[in-house]
Length: 363
Ligand SMILES: C=C(CC[C@@H](C)[C@H]1CC[C@H]2C3=CC[C@H]4[C@H](C)[C@@H](O)CC[C@]4(C)[C@H]3CC[C@]12C)C(C)C
Ligand SMILES: C[S@@+](CC[C@H](N)C(=O)[O-])C[C@H]1O[C@@H](n2cnc3c(N)ncnc32)[C@H](O)[C@@H]1O
Image (cartoon, rainbow, N blue to C red):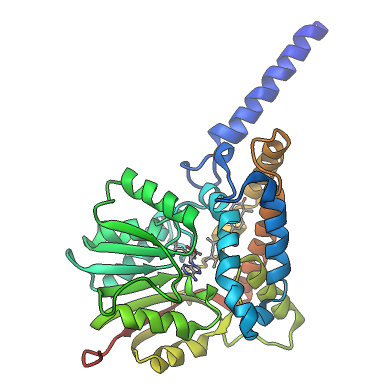
């Protein structure tokens, strides 16, 4: 073969490979967000690296961020920065629901996710005409599943403006915008009237609150008397040992890479709920057997991560993706290892479920 023909063939194969990697394979899990559309939320391209450095130095010492009052006050702003950095990567590589779910034999991740979300609607006994609150709604994957399954209306709140726009666009596309509404705000001080919701839920979101009593107190205030609240909490289990360096490293790794001001213990959740006035109707770690491991989805993704980091590197080199995306992607990769370790050792669960009721006789 002539040199020129070989060069053209190599170039053609190169272009086809890039096309296959970026456009055809798209995301690890779901098509919808394409790699070429990766943005860093509302952060301009030139600020991504700085914002990432600021985020990293703040969450490097997770426990301290929760315990000193001055630091705790800054948490929502850093959580907002975190979601500017990760929202597109999450959507691209995971889907529109930013949470875990127990694996289901013979069912896809997408189905397992939906089942985990519909369980919330069932626990809340949600019905058409009900007004539900989604506390920390992300880009609205759970909200759409719950509205579709139960026929209720859902109002979601998130601290991150970029997520609000993404969620509204997805709601419109799904034809659910008349029943799903999204508000930008802080769940530690919500812009809703007292007793204005029939039910409420939070899926893997309240772990971002420095003090759980603050967010539970707000949910209590906005619920109607008799209203139900379901929460899936991220917690350490009774197997966690603070004197085991491997345990400490896994938990710190989870906190650092997920913008958490210190994970709570499993046995703290119900007492905090009671403190703010809730009745505790049910409490269960949904990750316990017979449930199948939630972390297998993370483990199975190794080839996809490798592919994704290559895609991210190529797109950064071509200046299609902003500088700093590679660092954020690397951070998420490491976080995935810590989460897997937390799951395998059983010291951590992202699905400690509590079903709470605001007493009928309360104001
Ligand atoms: C509830 C929270 C988020 C939970 C999960 C949705 C995310 C936790 C870790 C994330 C990921 C880790 C590895 C990424 C991978 C390197 C990349 O190529 C594709 C996306 C990941 C799989 C990403 C997806 C979302 C997570 C699983 C927290 C923040 C409270
Ligand atoms: C891991 S995501 C989960 C999103 C959604 N529940 C889901 O399962 O797809 C956590 C969500 O909590 C929101 N959040 C964190 N701290 C918040 C705060 N102080 N006020 C409002 N939303 C907050 C984030 O913006 C994000 O949308």
